[in-house]
Length: 236
Image (cartoon, rainbow, N blue to C red; front, side, top):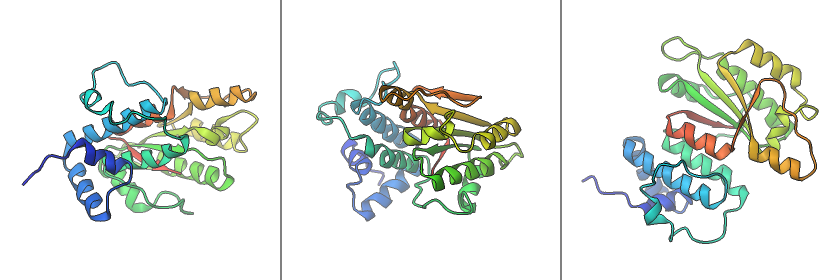
């Protein structure tokens, strides 16, 4: 019997409050039900709104009336953003458990990207040298990969938080490498989070981006949009 999944269950999943059996069963339902995926992504977006991360688009929300009271309370800490993004990643068919791997994106994940949309967003929110290096290695690997039709993957490299330093003039130790990547891969788009730039400005740091780096209004908004469009998600 195909029972209805309540908003409360989806909310518990996003908050990582389900036991493993319940969670695995729900993930299977989400993977096979486009309407359920859409509800789950919208619910996640509403949580981001309450965090003050970004506004919902102007279209009316089917969940807004039902969930506003349930979510009333203090804004979420910024540190929870990464775990929420991983949860949304599972809605598009890929819940990434793996740590940064020396060889780059694992082969099984490359095959999943190739077999489906051929589009992937690579997300960096750390300025740890090892993660910066891994992010660039993954970006090159993904940009060199072709989808099942033989076309290059569409790759978006999105940096926010401390990860923004990788795309900043005077802050990136890899400026030449980034310029070469962008020059040789037309299918690679570099994006910096505007909100992260503003926070750096507030701390007195003038942010000048490397050439050919575009600005996204917010990292969370960009990621939510891509995930609802069927893009795959890789976190470094």
